[in-house]
Amino acid sequence: MRTKVEWAGVMALAATVLTALLSAQGSGAAASDLIPILTEQKPAVEFVSRPMVQALPAEDGVEETDGTEISPDADSLRELVSQQSMPDDMSNEMRCLAGAIYFEARGETLEGQLAVGRVIVNRSKSGRFPTSYCGVVYQPSQFSFVRGRSMPSVREGSMSWREAVAVAQIADEGTWKSPAKGALFFHATRVSPNWRLTRLARVDNHVFYR
View (tube, rainbow, N blue to C red):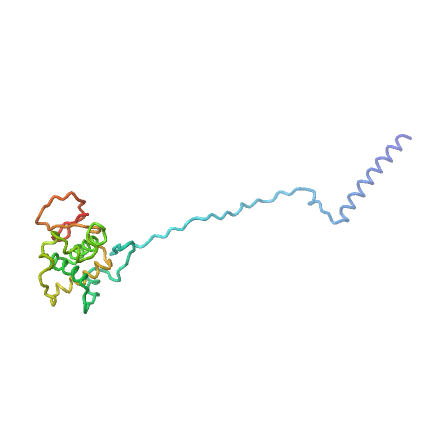
């Protein structure tokens, strides 16, 4: 009798389990809902923000003026000089600058003339000298060609004067880099004043200092 009861219990349990499985299939549940499935894990995509550094073009023939830089529209100083027009009416300031270039560096290379011109421009902006070109040129005991408050007469029809005027315009505008950039002083190579200054360069017949 006991065996029959136990057997009946087993059958009932089996029937219950079978009914539960059939109910799960009937409800639309799948075996995959109950069993974890290992899937391939793809690495997360990371976006890294990095600054892009682009090389700047070389600064050929550029002179700094008042914190700005001007690039010349010429491949050489000679070409830039040829692009300058002779003004019909020169201001006193530009005449002083061109006159200093003419008397100090006439017959030298254009680079030598420009270096002299830039000294006068640099002085006028330095705060250590007069603030005008004429004030710099006519400051006592600075330029040997000056006699009192005047300079000798200029041959204004000569090629040397036309070059000096063109170089003065370039020096004033800062459109070409001086070979003695930042210079405030110069002397002829024939003398040796033994200045306690920083020597920058020798250009033609002058030595430049800061």
